[in-house]
Image (cartoon, rainbow, N blue to C red; front, side, top):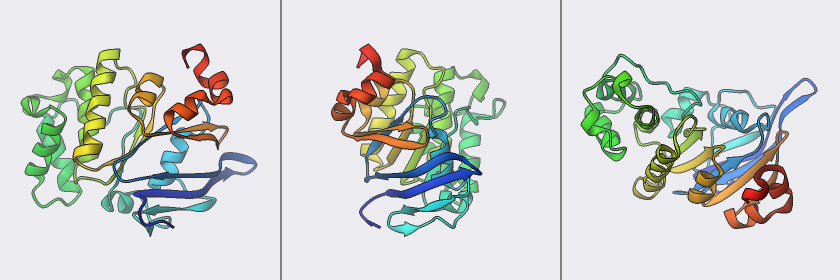
Length: 240
C-alpha cells in the first residue's frame, strides 16, 4: 500500500449470497483532495462508505489509512484514527444547544480540550455566533453545517460525506460546498463526497469516480469524467 495516500481502498467487495453490493472497488484519496463519487440510486455509493468506515464486513479487500491497514478495525476505532463520516440524514439533537452537542461529540472522541475543539470547528463553519441556540432554531442549511461540525471534531484526516447537500437550496448547497473546499485547504482534510448535485461535484472535486452496480466504471479528473461518453449518456445527459 502507498503510505502517501490519506486513504486507499483496494479490491473492496461485499457480497450477500449471490448479490454483489460491491464487487472489487478500488479508490484512493490524496491529502487535501476532494473525490466526488457519483452514480444512480442503488449503485453502491453509500455501501462503499459503510465498507470503508467499518460499518459493514468486507467479503474481500483492504482499507488503509495513511498506509496503515485498518481493515480489521471497527467503526469506532477507525474514527479514533481519523476516519470520519456523515449520514444522509442529519444527526443533530434538535433541543440541545449547538455548542453543547459539538462539545459532547468532541469529549466522546477523547479530545483533551473539547471546548476549544468545538469552538474551532464552529468558527470554521461560521456557526460560532449561533453556538448558544438550540439546533431546532437553525435553518436547514445551518443544521447541515452543524452535522458537518459533528463529523469534524477531533480534526479527522479523512471525511466521508453521504449526500451532505440533500434538501438544500441552490444557495445553501453552494455555501456548504464553499466550506468544504476551504476545509480541505486550511485543515488538510481529504474528502470522499457522495452527492447527486452534479454542479457541486464537478465544481469542487479534484477527482471524480463513477459507480454502476457496485463497480467503478470511470475515474479521473472531472473534465475527463465529464467527457466520458458512457458517463454522459448514463448520468449527465444534456447537462454535461
